[in-house]
Length: 216
Image 1 (cartoon, rainbow, N blue to C red):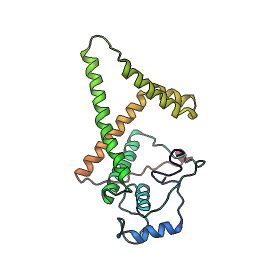
Image 2 (image 1 turned 45 degrees about the horizontal axis):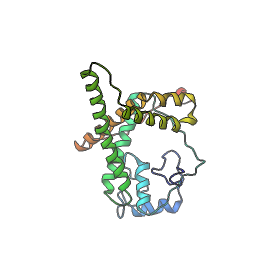
Image 3 (image 1 turned 180 degrees about the vertical axis):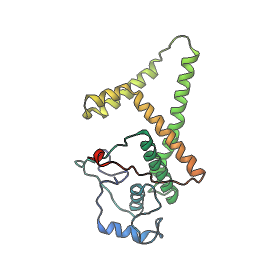
Image 4 (image 1 turned 90 degrees about the vertical axis):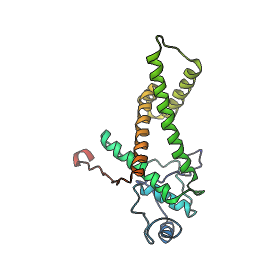
């Protein structure tokens, strides 16, 4: 956030404050300059309303910032099933939002991000496949100094990034493999979202209902 001078990529759905004039402008622009039903603040057809509202405001020329001292805490998904549902909703929602707005100066960066994720799916998949083929086809392990050094640099960057999280966060970043597995998980979610949109499958919110004891 400091590098971007407070400018946000996506408004946080759980903690955002709007000026009334901004929401009124969005409502007036719906069905005219931006997608949606005229008079509505939110596009109720969007799976990711915070992302869609961010693009709507940017398309109308609004400025959004996040104070450096403002931090947001949210609940994590309790199971892999609910995590899958959440991430699939986010990924598919983002793609559908971009499809509704098309390629514009305001959405160009978002399109570039999605193309980057697509490239990451191919790159990580190819890396894991080639690593497996190398292990299976060679009798002795061979160290490649260049790739070993590049991997060490990547690990160092991750450790520095999570340093404030304490020794547990640093240890997790140092092992690297959990993050690679999580990245592979997100790549599968990305592909599933693309397939569902291409086949015209219905998408649902799949809200997670927490028990009072768990919420407490």
